[in-house]
Image 1 (cartoon, helix red, strand yellow):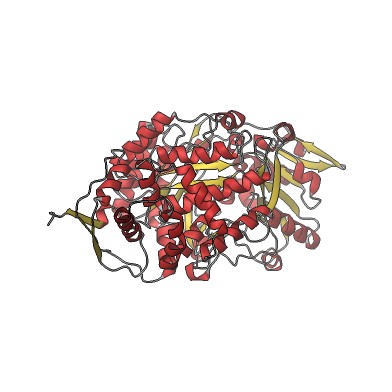
Image 2: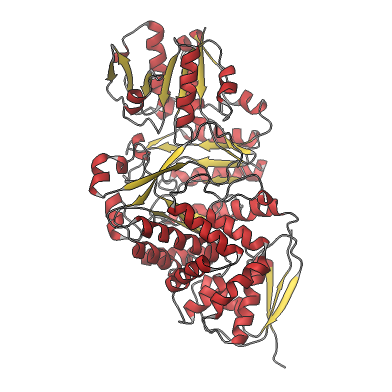
Length: 640
């Protein structure tokens, strides 16, 4: 039998790692063909990033080695392919996946690669193996490219898969041995219920799966969910582009919840929600929230600049609809998070920064994420004409997933191509935009100075833009540890993020952190020192002393920290109610009345690593680092 090896290198996040789903689906499809199953031997999927020499030892007399390619493994794949070709010159090397897309670029650039497969491998790859087995002309195989007499041949792109006949890698046992032989990992699992995306966002390469929506059979979906329960899978990532778009998604949600209630697994379900945040999405989020299966509801914008949205082919919710959604989710006790992307053509420093502030004004205080615009190899934004039209410039930086293993093997570096300037935003403005967004994420969303910012805004003393823009400037000039960190972050952006540009401190675990999370953890660890460093900035707004003192006590109390014990204080003003009303979009004037505020931690953390992991990494979308109404009591006291 001819030896077939699949390589799908995935990134570990601490002790958790995603199962190599793409390779598994293709293997399951190949094995469903009797001729392929009788002539080819499929070896264990290689999914761990190890030294090239160690990986090479696992491959013996290969007939064909297939690589699943994405931005987190493409350079490793190229390097390993060369090693394999040197040792086994007759071995066929095949590349597929998102970083291949529908172009022949890799075939043109990499001599070690023999063919490319485009689109969905579940149908393409079996056809390729059958053609090789039968000695047929590869031109008859659709959706591939290969070399012939020194020329590159690209065949006709075939039709999308018939999802109703695809075998499940879970149910056919493809992953059973892999899980059994790697007990050091807790595997996160991917679930698909449909494929396709009706949208055409310029920064996204999802539409290579086609715009027409196709559906997996409901019985297969439910059987895979039961498989997750049987294998005690804690985290399930749903790979649909717009979950909640269809009525049948409610049936899937109900089955997930029933399964968790009955078996305890899967514990968390994360997905990409339908872009227009319909009533159905709200119902889904509420259902998940009621049983603790979610990590917050997505209410995303990407950008609030009309020009930027036009350039990326995106249409947003109206601001009125967004504000109504924020009110609705808050009333239901469901945490929300919003996402923005920095670097779209048409965006300016002012439009981006004030767009963030608009979300704050509309009630998005709990969780904001800002991502850097990355040019994906096969997204519309990567096309030369688009790049030229918008004068897009990029920087090539080391790829490093947030919350990934800090000591992951870097024998071969992966890279990201990040937009650092366009015809509407200079490099200096891009740096300033990054610092502003980090300031809001760290000090507002994660809460370090949120109470002060809210008070100043609702008392009409200053707006969010002035407050956080000034805070960023203040930190750059500060002599304290936060100031030192802020200058270091700025230098990394100015110098094009060379080297390892995530935050790392072994005190918080052997993982990397986004800058804003790292800054929060550093501030929380040295809380008194950090507050003393920030005091001169907030004092300049001339808040009356008695109010200022209450604000400072309230701000310090609501941030969870390890080793917290019962704490209480009496405020001169009703700040707990004041802020609760703001969050519920029913802001009322601050009252001067004695208010007893008591916090009794239910399960205080006893070490910084667990605190960082559970409140910031796992819990950021649910504000797990902040005490909420269920965790404190408030009582208005009678005046003496």
